[in-house]
Image 1 (cartoon, helix red, strand yellow):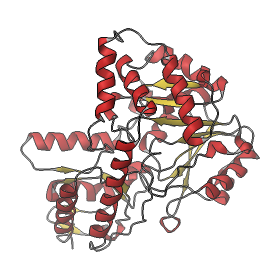
Image 2 (cartoon, one colour):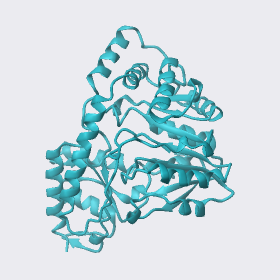
Image 3 (cartoon, helix red, strand yellow):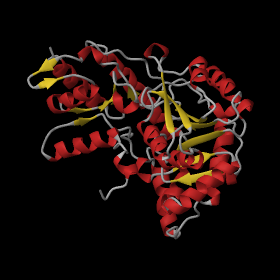
Length: 396
């Protein structure tokens, strides 16, 4: 009775929930391999840490501007111009405590009660809950494994109504690893351009973990000028998850609205983390490229190993560091007191019987799948898949 309805209706993040359970079991002495979290296992590059130490000595320990230090916002604008050929002024940049807050700010800045938000499914878990908290209506558009889990222009067009306010998607995609080509993005842009009430939130946090080459942004097309909020950050590409720095480039009115919201919720992001982000954005991508190449090698490794497991149907991820196999082959099978009715049951079975932590696809909008992160060592991947195969063989 003490807790507000908006909280009781809110689902806990299933990825964080599984990671928490994994830690608890490890605390009990269980040898669990955690493939649930999307966290690079690399350390933050040395040049970024060194810049942070200098910032501490230079006295960057005070409150920060709500939207971020001006030199950092200028560096982000330069990054958008240099890497993505997108033009934003510093006033159109808002730095936040992680890309998650960046997306939440944008959703709350734009969505009114009952307005529709189109999200291709599978989707990142928090899109759904952010829309729910803002009072919006999530319009889920199911994509197909046969099409690499990518939304088509026709599928998007069919979902649009007069009440559509936002379209949110990620490329490279969490959880599927799908990467949209320039041609595919242009087709989506043409559909959206015919509906001037729709704003796009383009989640590009996995920009640097792209195995196809150059990253493409939907914001590049003239048809969508001043109608795209581009979300990015430092967590994935620079192994800076704990630093919690995300940012947006957005139409000025939306950027100011996000700054206004953030000013009441958290104020400016951490001062030292912002100086670290400045170093990351102005520095070399050599470490980032090495990490990407390692993820690419791990992708090939885990795909080869998973191909030996009966009943796993996988797309070939082109970015991020996840595999999202259809595991419905195991639904209806049993072992001891376990009865596998869905992906949730399968994940719990594999956690307790296989000592491997993965996440149910239901969290991402596809109840036939599971998400497996390969942001870990080759040794862990090999051992984890061995355990999965052994445990799954018990189900009859």
